[in-house]
Amino acid sequence: MIVLAFRDVEIALGGRTVLEGVNLAIGQGEFIGLLGGNGAGKTTLLRAALGLIPPRRGAIEVLGKAASRGNPAIGYMPQSRAVPANLRLSGHDFVAGVVDGARWGLPLLGSEGRREVDRVLELVAASALAHRPLAELSGGERQRLLLAQVLVGSPKLLLLDEPLMSLDPSHQAGVVELVASLQRSLGLTVLFSAHELNPLLGVMNRVLFVGNRQAALGTVDEVITEPVLSRLYGTRIEVVRLGGRIFVMAGAQDMARDTHGCGDHGHAHGQEHSHEHSHGDHAADA
Amino acid sequence: MPTGKSTPTNTPMGTTPPMLDYGFMRNAFAAAAIVALVAGPVGYFLVLRGQTFAGHALAHIGFTGATGAFLIGISPLWGLLGMTVAGGVAIGLMGERLAQRDVAIGLVLALALGFGLLFLHFVTSYATQATALLFGNVLAVDQATVWSLLALGVVALAALGVIARPLLFASLQPELAEAKGVSLRLMAVLFLAIVAFATAEAAQIVGVLLVFTLMVGPAAASLRLTRRVGPGVLLAAAFALAEAWGGLALAYETNWPTSFWITALSGLVYGASLLPAVLLETASARPKAAP
Ligand SMILES: Nc1ncnc2c1ncn2[C@@H]1O[C@H](COP(=O)(O)OP(=O)(O)OP(=O)(O)O)[C@@H](O)[C@H]1O
Ligand SMILES: [Mg+2]
Image 1 (cartoon, rainbow over the protein chains, first blue to last red):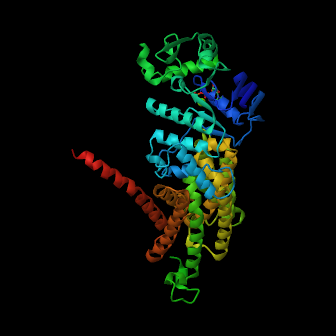
Image 2: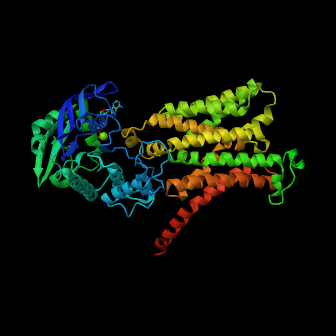
Image 3: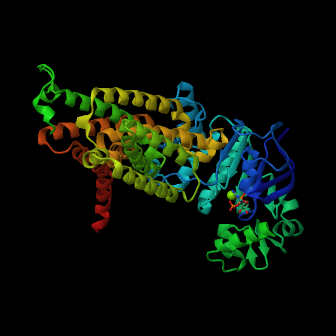
């Protein structure tokens, strides 16, 4: 069964074509890693699937129906997750605010709503920290609450936009493992966007790589290859496999970098984020 | 105090405090209660959404409406309301993500105040009316105004009750709310229209310059002290009521302006709401300080 399908989709933002000729079909129960440099179009692709950005051409279907806003079958974690740093609201109420949130009226939860909040908090093992104010939670703990919000309403398809952002490697592994176990136990389909390939290697079924206005969907061995990535980055790419990890390099630059893998292959990376940015932008502009 | 104090309008009733023997004091307490019960809950969402500057700007824009109303000879309350609602809708339409929004609001607000000044220039009884507009004159509120305030307050609270759920969603997780079908722009416009009503109300008590004190002060204190939405909204209303009534009582006792006392109480409550965190911090810092 096809959960998400793009047919010859072209998307433009502010007059600029961000994606074109995108064809893909994602099946029930798949864990897809959505990769690509900064500005490659990962967020755009997810928002298009949510019906927030109408394609200029082609068709997008979610569970057999045209993508449209407010689809209860989709759970979404946006990339910008600006929880006000000093908000003293409890995690519980932060999650409860999402339950049936689009309905008019007072935000009072019935017994069903309260059960739903308890259920999703339990799924992400956040019941114990849900009474604490958001201001006192760590980034990783907040991440679990955001994941709980995604699970409200039992969606079938999860669109997660960079859940690993600003987490250290051990917390990254924790989030990946949590999402993977939810995916298995609840039979979910997951589209998980990330900048780094390696944290997802063990769990994803296929990879969807975007760049240069195009998208390539396939197994890691099919997509993470020099010809495919050279086309998507618009520049010559080298793929190096080392100790179970994969490094994608343009010249001496590591493109889809693994944080704790930085020093492993002898490059002094330092604050490498700026490099990654410029490369991603270059790839999208090319 | 105004001269009204020397002419009780009603026979004293043994159980009520003597200040309620005066008709103008009863009107003032009634008006303050209505306004506080609207400003507290509306303010809670205003602070939660980080839109206090927009609220502040609306009050100042209202000043122009009120002086314009003087000029054409209608009640300043309606002029104020008309301008704040128009301003609120305009700011809401600017959208959530416009980076320059605060600059735009600031410029519109300055422009509006300029026009307000121009209108005042043409109003003959300049000084008293301007002072009342800017700093409030709750003791001059008459019974008809109390009824107007009640009607406006009921409309504002009813509207807030209708949009509260999607508004909370859009405030906590705007992009997720958008994906789930909530129109962020509609929420922004409707909410700021409600804020406009609350602003026009609060300006009757504390004046356009001090609307912040009833709308933001109690709500900000409540948000610091509560972790749940429901209790937070109720506490904001309770703080606003206590500050407004406390200010009236203190003004009665001291003969100082009511608005002064309300701002003083509002500042005091907000200051006190910061105390638990400060105490906790110093308590946890102490063991580290002593090696
Ligand atoms: N509102 C907009 N108007 C015009 N262009 C836009 C708009 N939003 C995004 N873009 C452009 O679309 C392209 C894709 O952006 P998108 O946010 O989807 O990238 P991304 O892969 O999610 O990047 P990142 O990893 O930085 O989050 C970028 O080149 C960006 O500049
Ligand atoms: Mg993105």
